[in-house]
Image (cartoon, rainbow, N blue to C red; front, side, top):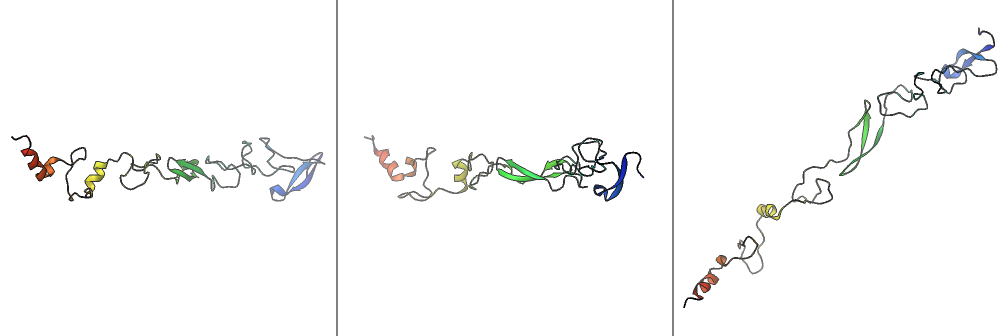
Length: 173
C-alpha cells in the first residue's frame, strides 16, 4: 500500500518489484543524480549511488573499479603501445597497464644484419677489424693468400723478397 498521492507500480528495472510512484509521473531514487537508481523512471539500476561516474552506461576504465556496473573489474581492456622498435598491445591488470608486446631495443650485435637497438641503423658501431679478426681477408688477384698488408692496408716491401734484394743493390756503388 502506497501513501498519499502515490500508487503501487511494478518496476521492471528492479526485477519486476512493486514500488510506490507518483500518480502520472516518475519516481527514481537517485542519490548521485546520474539518472540511475531505484524506481520508476530510472535509466537503470546504479551500482554506486554515491558515484555518478559508475553506471550501466559507463565505459570501463583501467582503474581496478567496476565502472560499468557489470560485476567485473577492468574486463578485457587493451590498448595500443609502442617502443622504438615498433607497435604492440598491452592489457589492463588490477588497474594498471602492462605487458606491451612491442619488441624492446637490445645491444647492437655485429654481423647479424639487424637493427637490434632500433635506432634505424643496422650493425652500427661495428668495426672492420672486429669483423676481419673473425675471418682472414680473401686473397687479392695476383697476390697469394695470406699476403700481409701495412696498417693502412698496403703491401709492404718486406713481403716481396725479390724486390727487397733489388732495392738492396740500388745505390750500392
